Image 1 (tube, rainbow, N blue to C red):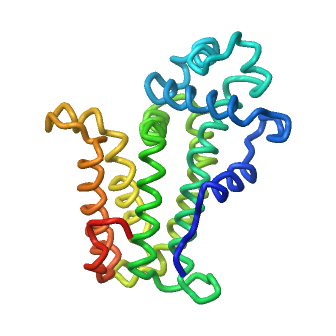
Image 2 (cartoon, rainbow, N blue to C red):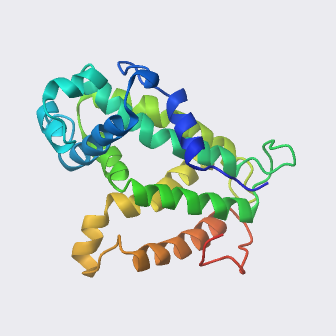
Length: 241
């Protein structure tokens, strides 16, 4: 069974993970909310939670005044958690899809075509939200207790879902090694975007260009197939599954 997570699925997932402090979605103008979240995602990724004011986010989102922002989010922590929730929830759903390889969608042995299809969708999503990996990376380096707690709450389900899926990999990994495998896969997928500025400075090329993303897509499919002990499907390797 191939995964078919379209934009409607992402909307449903977001709605199911509404963070504390946010107003019910039915009361909000989605376009305004998304503009706020996009601006906040960029700002928090660039300067961290403490380095950004609500006034700055309101201005970048095109709001007339700061009060308009508070109509959607009660305070900065509520906004920050909404950014994390919107960014991470679709990834959790995609990871879950990669493990549903049985005829009825039940969890089972990982299938190469399914894994490649999900990798395509994850990369598509990160192309649309390139600031998310850097936001997560920055929060992980911060000593702020709140940020650590918020990150744990939102990444914890992704970690648990990932371990559950990896248990179906036919590779040579022991159960005790799956957390290390999961961490390695996270860095392979998210690290490329989180460290894009570093890569650009070193190789003098734009790692976000379509050609660079296509090369990363090819590499990622090959590397993940080998790490998971899957036989890569050569007819789709290197191009969209």
